[in-house]
Length: 119
Image 1 (cartoon, rainbow, N blue to C red):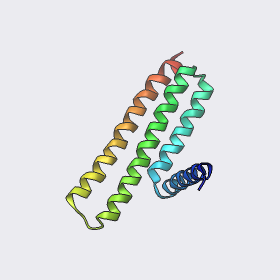
Image 2 (tube, rainbow, N blue to C red):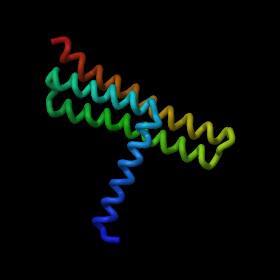
Image 3 (tube, one colour):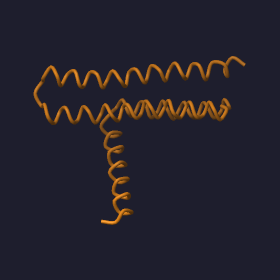
Image 4 (spheres, one colour):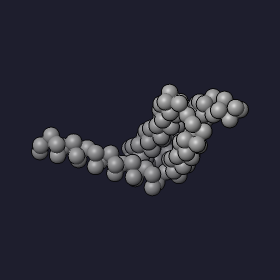
């Protein structure tokens, strides 16, 4: 298989994975809607280039963490269909990572938006 074909397939797998996660994970749907709403608000408020970079990175980080969480949960469910204490730890810790990312994104959002709104 040619390098171009392999690269194309890699993108197909990635888009398929994103589509699957988006269909199956309500929390990812929430993060996407909130992220898009935040981008729209930033557009109307008039963010600087630096603020846009920070905002995109923050939103992308939360979505990435949610995707990792989804993958970890699927893998744990596959290898440990029965309830197991170690499986619970893996799922809880990956969910906690998403929570930390989401809370930090709210803090970043406050730090970016409040000065703009107060003007």
